[in-house]
Structure formats: structure tokens, C-alpha cells
Image 1 (tube, rainbow, N blue to C red):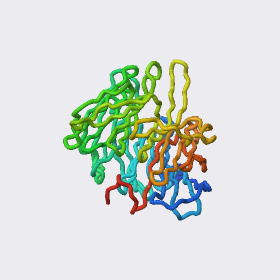
Image 2: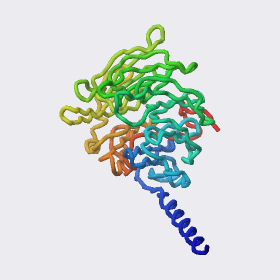
Image 3: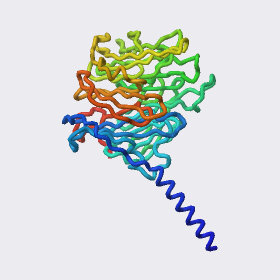
Image 4: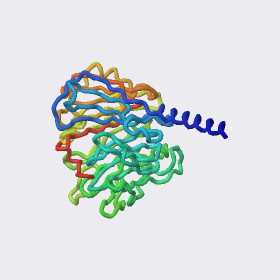
Amino acid sequence: MKQIIICLLTIALIVSCRQEEKVVPAQEIDTGGEVVKSSITGMYLLNEGNMGSNKSTLDFLDLSEQYETVHYFRNIYSERNPTTVMSLGDVGNDIKIYGSRLWMVINCSNKVEVARAKDAVRIGQVNIPNCRYLAFHDRYAYVSSYVGPVAVMGDTPLGRVYKVDTLSLQKVDSVVVGYQPEEMAIVGNRLYVANSGGYRVPDYDNTISVIDLSTMEEVDKIVVAKNLHRLKADRYGQLWVTARGDYASESARIFWLSANASGAMQLAGALNVSVSDLCIVDDQLYFYGNQWNDLDATSQLTYGIINVRTHDQEATTLFDAPEISGIRMPYGIIVNPVNKDFYLMDAKNYVSSGELLHFRADGTFDWKVWTGDIPAHAAFLWAPDGQDTDKIPLQ
């Protein structure tokens, strides 16, 4: 009996040590960048982590005045939530702040993590299969979902959008949309969902589902182009949606939709520009594009600005800094809506640390810092009395 007790104590000690070893302390990095007083006090960056590696991590950029220079903190989620099993999980796909809460879509772990926005301390999670992107309206979160498993096959199920109560974190409704739904945007009382059909190659989906938020019913489908992905609304009530094409005969493009005389959204125009990710601030749509071609296995990188009012691509020197040409694999872009400085994320080789690069509003390179694996999604943290119109008071 004494030997059994000693053995059990030894095992308990080993397990305890292993659990402690999983908690990797956050790394603090002084970027040397100047702190500019603003209603934006920080930025969370969600690193996707290579699929199957369970390495999605959360970083934080401190833009407050508590330091003389801008400080970057790598991998804060594990340190601030040491009892969370496997930390964030497998593939971080979206991040947004709504009210006082931080929401993170962890795609292959089939969950949405919810934490306090002020310090990333975990509140809970919402289990949603193969979840993709977030949108918010009133007290509800909307989460797009592929529904089926991660697998390219012709008989994949139709996707869904789940409606989640932001206070209780309970799913309260859902609606069937198109195949493999991606980003969403809300204009008025309508939710617009970009359907990709990415698992059904070469039979991609080409529609935007229109959801009436008062009934959670699909009331229309708008045909646009193959393999839709990004979808954002501008301040004029227009929708901007990207199509990735089929990577061969049909190239990537960006489209805009506007309301007709009866108020229904309709396709209004297109630009033959490859847009992989975008961020709209005022009248400017900042973007980067990575046009891949399966036929010759080549890719072409582009950066630019589209004026959402005139629908023209602007001539700009904003992306002429030599450091931009050194980006190996651009994977995210976000623009400070107050100061117009911007950040580009470089995924490098996908399996090791990426980089976050900061540029001033005039395009001048400022600093760069190592991130987690595949930095891709970011959200600004506003001061409690900031002017973020997406915020609502939550407890």
C-alpha cells in the first residue's frame, strides 16, 4: 500500500509539472515606436496557427500611455488563462470586440472563445461546428459555419449562420444559407452572407444570402461570382465583396452592391482587382491581393486603395516602402480609424513565427515585430469613453 501511495503521488507530481509546462509565459517586446495619444489604447492580434497544430495564439499591442514606447506582448492567452485546456485551439479565424467582450472564432476546434476585452481573461465559449466569421447586431452575435467537417467533397452540407445571445452565450436560432459561408455584413435589418462553396471545387457557390434579422429567414440570394470570401459594408450602405475565382480561368475580383429604388441590394459594379483582405476607413478601402494561378503555380502580390464613393482605384504611393516588398506572404491588414496608420501581417512560411509591420499614415515604415504563427486577424481596443460605434454596454 505504501508503494502504491508513493507511485500515485509521483504520477500526480508529473502530471502537475506537465500542466505547468503548457503555460508559456507571454513575451514582452519594446518596438521602440512612438506612443500617440488616442481613444484607441491597444490592438489584439489573433494568430491562426497551422491547421492541425493546435497553435492558435493571441498577442496584444499596447498603444496606451503607460509605456514611453509601444510594447508588444506575444502569446498572452495561455498566461492569463492557465487552466484553459489546450489554450485557444486549432486555427484562429476571426476576432472582434463587441461591448466589453472579446470574441475569437477558433475554426477547427469548433468553438467561439469569449473573453473580457480589457484583459483577455476567459468568460466562456460557444460550440459551433466549423465556424468561420462574426457579425454583431443589437445584443446578438452571428457566426457563419460550414457545418460539415473539414473536407473537400461534392456532397458537403449547406452552411448555417448561428444567432448567439451575447450575454448568456447561448445559441438561440440558426438559418441555412449557401455552401461554406464566409464573411458577413449587416446593413439595416439585413444580414448579408458571402457563400464560397470552397469544399465543392470546382462547383463553387456564387451567391450572397440575404437574411431578415427579425425572422432569421433567408429572404433572397444575390448571384455575384465564384468563390466569395470577404464582405464588408461602407458608410454609404454599400457592400463590398471579394471573389477568389477558380484559380485558373476565372480570376479574383472585387464587387460592390448598392440598394435599388425599392431598397433591395443589387450588384452595381466590379473592379478587376485581386483582393485577399481589406479594411475600410472613411472613403478608403485599403487592400492587399494575392492572386494564385493553379495553371502555372504562380502568385502575384498587389497593394492598393479603392475609393468607395467613386468606385475607382486610387493612385497612391502609400505602399511603396521597401519593407512592403520584403513581405513574403501578406495575410492581414488593419487600419487605425483615428490616426490612419496601418498594419500589415506577414505569415512567412506558415509554420513558424510571422511578423507584424507598422506604417505611419503617409506609408513610412515605423517598426516590425515577431508574432505567433500565421498572424491574420486583429481588433482595436478602445478606451471606455472612445468613439467605437460598434460598442454597446454589456455587463
